[in-house]
Length: 108
Image 1 (spheres, rainbow, N blue to C red):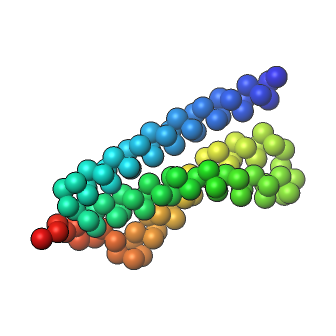
Image 2 (image 1 turned 45 degrees about the vertical axis):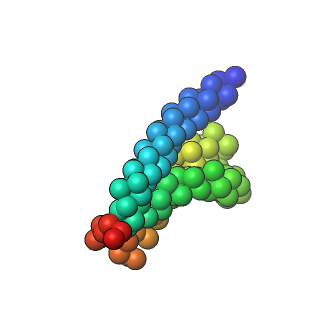
């Protein structure tokens, strides 16, 4: 029961923060496109997609951690943060390397 309680606390804290970040990025993207700021919209959508993809990343990472010999609770603790923080880091790298969002422009 103790492990179950720890998993619930980890899940709640990470999922609440993920949900807030996901909502924020999506609202920013929506607001940008309504203002016809296409490049700004693209950067926020890349971030939103990265957060959306956290569910997939979690399911890919858990087995890898388990195979490496970590106990489930330790693996879950790491993956619950990694699945969306790493995705956001990759999204920021994509934005910066491709130059998306450096020059916000409006549609004519």
